[in-house]
Image 1 (cartoon, one colour):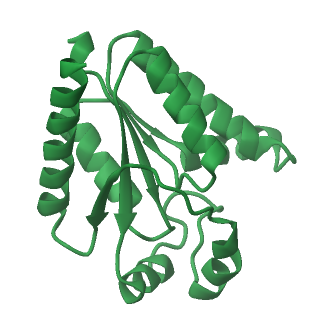
Image 2: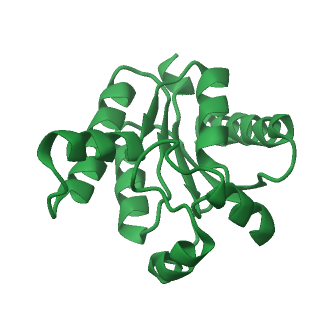
Length: 179
């Protein structure tokens, strides 16, 4: 089974459906899901909103992902993948465990994203962006880089998005095994 393990890393703007598709992928693969928002919220609940709690939640997220990969399991990491350095860290972890990495890049039309943002108040954590205005202030922090991932439009039916991701994982494993 070790040769079938995959590091799946979500990417996309807030409100683009990352968590929804991450949960579907996790269930389909019977793979652990590590949600960075949940880790950050728990850290704040216990330690308070300290300056390094964000970094701590990323480090904990990756430590948990490494543990799953060391067991030969695939793992789904739910994060916006805002920064290139986070992407590079994920890539390094995948290489360490000789596991293919798939970035699932979630996108949707702006009107869908806006509706989702405004409808999710208090759903996961106090850190979630819940208004279009807040998103517009945050958006410049999102670094643009090529993640070589699978781009899905989450305004399409969930089953269609999941099928595309599963096909991509299958193709990724075919390529990986040929190397």
